Length: 316
Image (cartoon, rainbow, N blue to C red; front, side):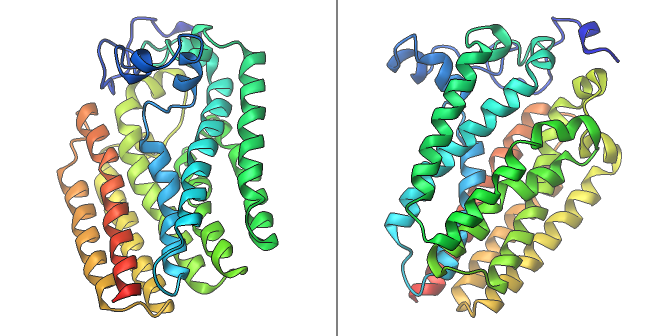
């Protein structure tokens, strides 16, 4: 279907903000930031940090997994800043690619590029600045980690196109969003080892699970405008598929811990984290977009529980 035929008042069901827009008005961005900067904060999704958390956590897991004791605060801090910057860069790339689609949907029509608050040339300059900051952070790491980090660009730029050509854009997102598992291990050790590969694979299946949940909040509009997703592919069979993905996630996380010879606190944390995933899978209401968003957001808690288990096992 031609996206131009989508009614402009057809807001996506996933709205979690006032009205149809996915931007909250009257929040800290409007209260604290100069008006000229506000569209760029919105474009970078600084006001909606869940994506940053999901990008950051695999890197923090890997840093903690590779550390012989407490993880380096310096590396954790660099990865924190890097996650903010590179998530912002990814959002700019995504919104540039999707600007015509976004303008046709009430939930996304007020996004800065789609609404015209940020022009395409200005967005490209902003993207270049973000990538420059990302490069400056990457250069703080060892040579091997720099190479691993640079390779991630091969995934970041094609991602927005995947939902146009395959029902599995969530798989490509999994490859992209969990790259920090490889980078984090390389930043600590200067190489890649089996625990890092297992951790990366676990993150891949984790993303398949949580992003399928996320995609259910937009499934009606995605079907109308011709955007593909695992939510549309699996439809009524989504729950068993998500259960499969998240079961594989837990098994691979167990393998990563075993390969890294982690102590028993890790498996306590993993059991608690597995219970959290089981709750998500059993409780999510795929026909309630707000509940899908709530369950999706709760994956930050899953990641922090797992991180606590890794750190505890290293310092016990």
